[in-house]
Length: 137
Image (tube, rainbow, N blue to C red; front, side, top):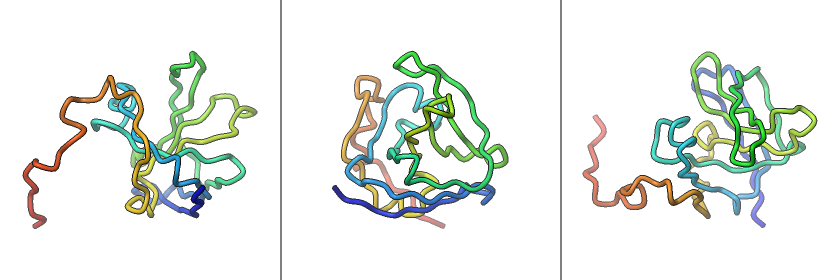
């Protein structure tokens, strides 16, 4: 088990976090909900236990029905829109948070170890090595 302390902030800085994560659980999700929420072909995230996660600022939450049939809170910054995490809707059930990697400062050090919902994956999402790279200007 590889533990790592991470921190992050939304784009505007209104919401910040610190977490102690297990890097073995970084995952890409190809489900259609993650595609829609992220406006991307997949979403990268890592779970963290509530006791290993601290948050400053007040996220906005959207409630959806998860694959389990339970209500899930999907949190984002109400100012800049940065996707932050998902968790159980009921406060007493918030024992785990699924942190989105986009707002984690150490995201480049967190390669995914698994992929889920691959049946929903866009056919080109698995290999973009041959896609032309546009130079930074």
